[in-house]
Length: 278
Length: 164
Image (cartoon, rainbow over all chains, first blue to last red; front, side, top):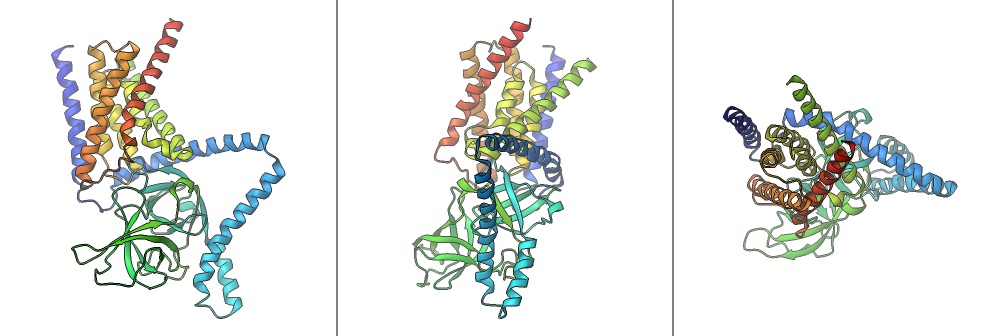
């Protein structure tokens, strides 16, 4: 290989490496807004992802439709869909029962809630760390905006939508992401804390509970408070697994989220204006 | 010359799209497989072998940045590691005979291991020491990449030989 060609190759390599190092260095420390370039790449490629996954699911369902008993399958799908909405409504009702007095109020709000609920399918995952984010097949055209709460088919909290939201896809930051935080309260003793993901695995920490606090118990449920103005109040989030005293001011409390990563395929995006917390 | 450059650009675009489709399908159908099967690395090593370092480096950069844009990690970490992966795979494969299956598999294993190692180090640096190894399953990724990569290359060579 001529020396000149070799030099050109290494100049290109150095250029690419410097470009990436600059890109990395401007993002540290983490937690800042996503860069325009990153958002642009997401916008360009996310429709391809949706098309690929949709095409696969279409093929899969065509295959299933051929072999399955069609009527049973249709009924089953209808029931599943009904169950999906009922689970969301159940959670919503539990929350609202305390607030609303008249039946007419409840029915009216329930109708509005059902109409504003956005069902979505999971089409992608985070290749770097599973427990950080998901990609959904609904975007701004379906009314999705950043900071909308996302629940699984049982109405348990999964995470929130974050920027970038493209026309037909949206990214969800999971509650198991170490950078996420959810304001929660324990269901029995009403201890308020902040829940955030662990650096590894699918469990979370319940933070800022004073070491002197004696009220919380293992096995207690955690629900959202709505104080963060993102997650509506009353959504089931997690269960306390273990409580350990530490040398610091706060206890080390490990909690297990209710949503299961292995079975999450369909989710509900909740409207920002309802649900009790706002 | 212009034809070759155009062909290489088209080839890189096709490779990126293939990698992305692969990632989308695996992620959409069996997300758990993404731990051991990194479609972007697989495509980078497969397409860079024998194509030269410039092609490999640019393909690695594009594939890495696409992978980063669909992750909440630091944007550019996979871009950097895959740039180096593509560049050195292209560079070495042009100067060494890596055609025999076993030699090819060992070569790809070394390259993928080095890439994973660099990715872990950079992620640990950027994410303040937090990298999820998924109970060690992540360490299988280079083996899967090497095995599948050398299989794809062996099949491609056989098809080319039959055509010729």
